[in-house]
Length: 467
Image (tube, rainbow, N blue to C red; front, side, top):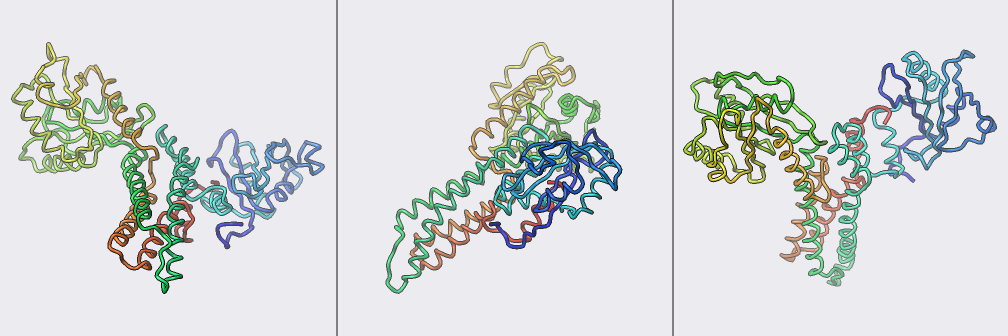
């Protein structure tokens, strides 16, 4: 039994390793004729295999011939359905990674009756045969695209079904009550209530809270997936560009004693402790008559709004108590979003005799004293950034990192608000039932209990061919 009727029984094939020359290449076939097609081109050395006793999940050594000519010695592995990735019979052929061998082997498989797989078709078949749900299928693509420990961990958690279980649990609670509401509609003329309204309101409150918690985790999940944006801000010549270069360990930004050298945001990404950080060096904050520099300063404020973490850099060698007070006022004007993490970076400790005490007295923020030029205490900055991210990640049991899931949760939350308002204001049961169906619909689109061909096409078209 599959999720949808139009799934055909074609046997598909694709190169599942990266194209080009390599040590080995792996071709994958899936479908009812996968084993027969493989046997048509493969000659095994194993007597067990020759006698037709093919064991699932076992690799067989043999040869592939093309019109009597030896093409390659390969390993062939059979995964019999339903105990395979797609739920169908799957065959994987591992050959040598010569581009010539790959092309001829692929041609042989197509001539034997397979057709080329489309992007994501193997995973779509796994979804169709309920080997995984839609959110787990999307996690497969995220896992392939992961480039850090944090993105890898997010994808692994979603693939294992923790998020799916939460959504299924929410949906089941709603289904149980929705069935009672629908039953009331069948007996509308008799004016009876099967669903306890007080109990229903309590359930709605619980579901709304869970949906809100999941929705709010998207802010953390999104930055973990795309890279945590860190804006380096401050006045001209305080060492912002030097700090960026030191963190990246390369000369990314121009360093000069001339104020206003950085006129546009400079960005680069680096992995620290398994997390992707996207550092943004910005134009110095000051009053200027230079039109180009002022455009850069405007963009600095845009980057401040986009960033999750702000590194505010100041020059210790020229900062007195009055300037510290002025900086504090500047902080207050910037800190409109209290969820942002602000870290004060006191730079150029190599140019002073002792650390000024007025910073801790005037500024109630985490403060780190460094010398970006001499790379002193830079590790303290990295440690602080890691702490900030880990604290955010630890607060959420399940983290939503997929924008489609986030928007579906928001729509489900809106529908639940309507249900709650309807119950509180005693609106007709058929209208409450309609809003309940909307909530169930939006939750169902996350895991694939509700879908359209257009939605599936959009999701799986983004996969690589061979997966």
